[in-house]
Image 1 (tube, helix red, strand yellow):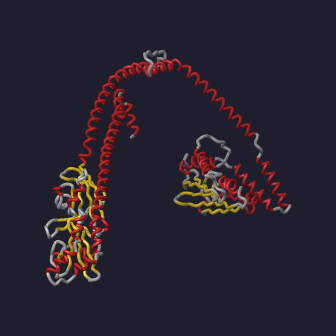
Image 2 (cartoon, rainbow, N blue to C red):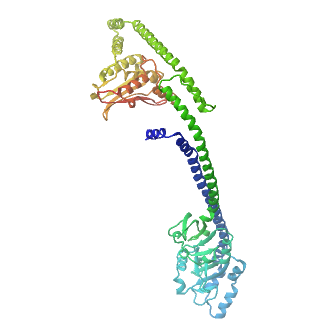
Image 3 (tube, rainbow, N blue to C red):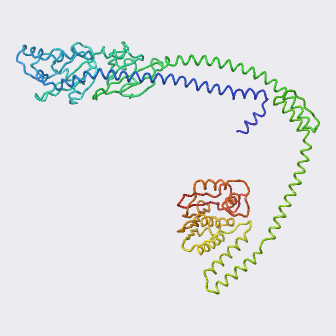
Length: 597
């Protein structure tokens, strides 16, 4: 897909490319930035409005809490008033006694006179000797069937806030309702304190956004919009935010087809049984109208600037393409074999510089061809020298048969003198060296490789004695598998030398070979000193380095490259180590007869 796009772009005319470049470099970024800034500007306006509405709700909550604190305090005082208990529960013998008792208990009237936050106080009591007035009322069947009355009786002194109708004047009030227990008389009454609606609305009228207070039954108990007071959320099409479907937090709503933002705060004043909700609303259109005006103005300016830029690009593209066509004609002449063609283009810009470089290139082509021929001659001479040096180095090597004969003589001397352990080690050393010298570029069996590994470990065991322990765990089915030579033994040598040699108490070397998932999996591990993270990073970089190293150095990089060349780039060495706990080196090769290269 990418290649097709590149081909398509290369086939376009330069003028078209300039316009596309303008679109990619200028037009698209401007559009992206414009959309981003537009979105951010609108979001900033919405965030600021949301912060204001949050502050409004907090302010309303604080002021309303102060107002509702007055009836809470009054209810607490009256619930512990022994005079109220006597007045409500006394059995009166005449109307005169009742009236006198009312005049002797002026607390209800005093509270109303002293506190503008409340409008009235009444107590419902089951006492047939009292007379109904504005303060003491009989709890008749109509009252006792009310939900608020039953809730107050059932909750035993917990405060409830309800928007209820006052039977005395037929008006609705936000009222504090609480059961009052008269312990001495073993009776109970229900105290109702009506909150002053005007004072409650006065708090909301100070807010800039539309704000309402709603009880648990979705009744609007206070509002800074007079036409909503006394209605329910359903009456003003706020059913989506009823108590059953919405909790506390910000919401996006639609009213009469217009988007609005709303914030709800669910609040239990004074630890009451039920809650009041403060709802504040603002129109999204009113908030984003100013950002939209700014965006429209900015869009007009940007479009004008883009049109001007397109005209300028068209003019300069004509100047540019004309000179480029002149250059193209002279390049065609040179391509046809006319090395004497000279290009003349005025100007010191890039095209003029390109014309001068083109002329210089044509003059130097013959010189460059001569230099290439000379370079090839020198390269061949260097290769001949290198081959000569390699030949001399091979000729100067020690005859391996002399070395084997010397080792055999040492072994026989040690055996004759009764030093069988030394004799065994010399025999294994000779066997190991013979295998190494006989190694070619072909494949050997895993069994042959493990013989070399075993020889090496026995020799090292002789050297380190009890400091070295080793363990070979090999799947019997794997012995006949063909692998490259000297793939495992150098890894074992690496574990012994670098992992265990510096440990005073020695350690363990394990070789684990198994067949799994149609692969031969080899792991060589030790419990030595481990490798630091920095050194591990250096080793991994060394393994992946493409520069040539000495080919005679059979180390980890040599093994890593031979595995990748033989079985593919995914079959190299894998290392893991933890300082103080040891190192694991592993690789996996497929069970197949063919090779990667």
